[in-house]
Length: 339
Image 1 (tube, helix red, strand yellow):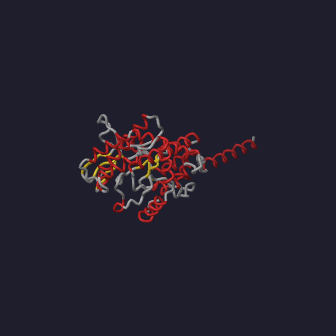
Image 2 (cartoon, rainbow, N blue to C red):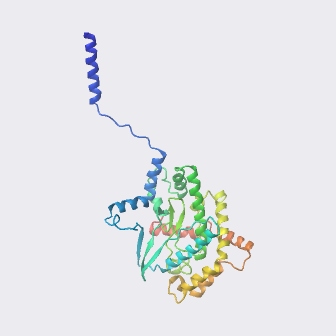
Image 3 (cartoon, helix red, strand yellow):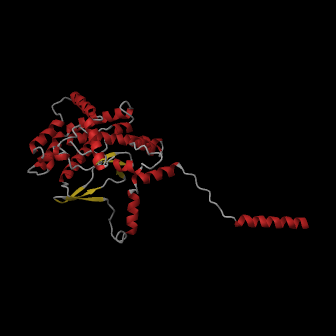
């Protein structure tokens, strides 16, 4: 019996010692989903759905008022947003035309509300961030420190799996092609990376249409004279000029241009109505009649369909890594710090 008692006593002491020692939690391994969520928050910030729930939870009115919702707007003061209204109407018109034709071209029209002659409200693009801000946000991330849009794009969307990555890349190409056609027709200027947004679905969306048609920054210097913006980093996202996705981009630009020509007369009528006795700088900078004539010429209505295909291909070639586009981006980087 005594040996057994000693054994029990020793066992009790050991159990007490174990119970008294602090419990060190074993850290949960970081999963791919965790890495994606962390990078998503760092790159894009809080999602709109999360912000909506937070605002609704803190609102005194949401629970009692029917048919209410949260929307995201910015207030612009000191700008004549009427040009932006006209551009969004033009883009909305072609978004419907492309959809009706069954073309997989992605445009994101947004609402603009005029408040006065030099102010207005502009709807924000949800779950999106400017390419400039994106590069700065992920500069400290160990896997995205290169500052390359292509590197971030493929790393970020690959974290969601091959199917999501492929879908995001397809959406990028479809949006690039659609905005290339519209940028060419409207001659959108000031296309630096602060005015290009990357969405959480992979689309590249243009915003801020203050300079278009005959109006350009810098006392109307028209420095950005490429048909549209097509930079080396955008081409790199698509895999380079010899890639399948770049070929898809070229095909969509051509098909989009051919479809746009079919609706040229309605589009021209829309702008002609808005130009009547207009003092908008997009018309007055180069003259109303010359602005409308130049727009009509960009549709190339006198060309056959085969000739229009060749023409569309030529404007892609002119735009690809255009010297003036590159220099404008460098200028914006030096003067305004836009990456």
